[in-house]
Amino acid sequence: SSVGIIGVPFSKGQKRGGVEHAPMLLRKAGLVEKIEEMGYNVADLGDLSFGEVKDDTPFQKHVPFPRTVGMACQGLAQVVRQVVCDGRTCITIGGDHSLAIGSVSGHAMARPNLGVIWVDAHADINTPLTSPSGNLHGQPLAFLLQELTSKVPAVPGLSWVSPCLTVQDIVYIGLRDIDPGEHYILKNYGMQYFSMRHVDRLGIRKVMEMSLEFLNPRGRRPIHLSYDIDAFDPSLAPATGTPVLGGLTYREGLYIAEEVHNSGCLSAMDLVEVNPLLGASTDAVNATVQLGLEVVLSCLGRAREGSYSLGYTLP
Ligand code: ARG
Ligand code: MN
Ligand code: MN
Ligand code: MN
Image 1 (spheres, helix red, strand yellow):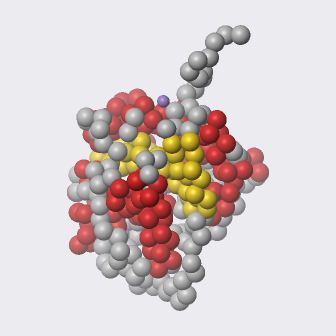
Image 2: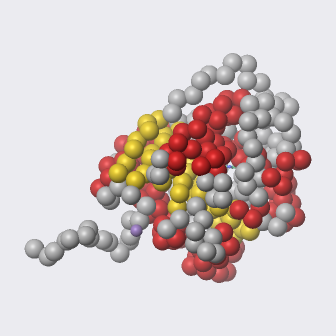
Image 3: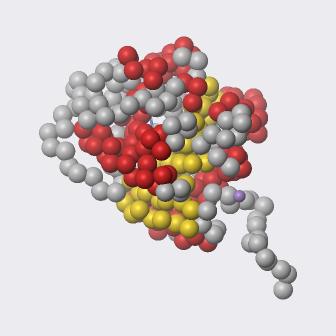
């Protein structure tokens, strides 16, 4: 089987620099080679570059870089669409989470019936009008959801986005920092979510069983996994822009990835929000990058119990 890897050194969905360096660091950690070692045919699409947008004034003085984000996502969508159409599992390495506007849109062009698993401390479903920060990395799902069309104003640069998801197509895991407008949407639009409290109550095994059953009861639906590294506890993933205490353990975080792999339905994934400029030390940065790498490998079938390849015999 085959995968395509897209680096997205993009950071304009939020105001802190550094998250654009993550693709380079994941590559340095051996991303491509390790996936090849697992037996995959890898098409490395390289790191995308993005045109500069001049005079990209904030939307309503509140939402920064709308055209820059819109243009980058539009370009990314085309690349993701092509990778998926070529029959590859598409791996997008961010970059900040605003890029999911592009990756999910592009994935949906190729696989209109996809379902999304959003692993994150945050719900990333603020509209430009509910967002306390204005940052677009906290808003991607608002632009992708059909039910919110009337609540999302026309933002310059993002008019190309056609909402390709309904609330039935998303499940969240790991939430623990939700803004009031987001909580209203989660509750009143009947969204399926497992907050950290649900993880505590049910255990990660049940959470994954219920998530996959909700999204994919027949086990035939393409899955888009959007994995924000800040879903992990900050003790494990300190190098990120918006860390929140009380996150996933190492084992829970990898278990999610393993179960998505075991579903056999992973079609595209994002790994986002690793910010190497925000670690307190080199060790902190390396740990965060390494964790991101392990998430990707687990999604592709690396098993904690070990493995041997077909035809192996004891010497
Ligand atoms: N909810 C906050 C906001 O809207 C934080 C979002 C953080 N998002 C992320 N992808 N890390 O700004
Ligand atoms: Mn987050
Ligand atoms: Mn996020
Ligand atoms: Mn396998």
